[in-house]
Image (cartoon, rainbow, N blue to C red):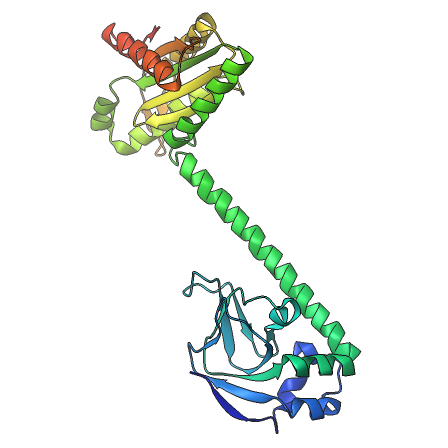
Length: 321
């Protein structure tokens, strides 16, 4: 635990370097500062605990402190050192502390109680101005942290819905999007067709050429699928060597034409590996289905899956409805 060390009788040179006292004649504040105490902290001592009321401003005169979010005492969001202050926001808004403040090393702070602080501010407009600058810096830093958090959340969400190997959306994304697209198509009375795509004999390809070549093949097939569909079409890697595409606005005949074009493109595209090895093209089988008035996502998916199995039963490298 921290302990009261001594009344302020020295440390004025250090206090002059405080951001709060920039441009201020500290000697004139001696009557106020002499009423303050200096507290000593050992490493990992808690200065402020999130959720507690705080009625003091702390000026760091030695050491440094870590600031942690309430549920994370391992990773600080910022480290404050000599010359910086702690607790000013709590004094202004009288709200419980929003973060933990913990000594990162042995440290000392000058403790200015709330009443003393207001007396000091009334005495010096320069300190009031400096306090506004400090608060503005805290706000700007908070906005920067929030922006980074939003970026991280976006990155996490992206990683949760995108297949890292192919860059296509994954099954988790598909499960959500499939329902939304079908609902929109039902509501607007627009056609909706889907493609269930499977790479033929992919296991044998992997066994023969290795998984690195297999990964290259998956990337090339994915790229081909995107190149042969419209911008408004939606594609996901369903799992393994299977892909699923939503084709809004296309009826069965139009979807079959798209599938056939895609099948031909892939069957003529050689596989280029990263070590510049050229491998023969793969082929794909495609099941095509179109949404019926009463269909739910499971119904349309099953129709496409059954069509895919018919394409395989008929010898693969073909499109079937």
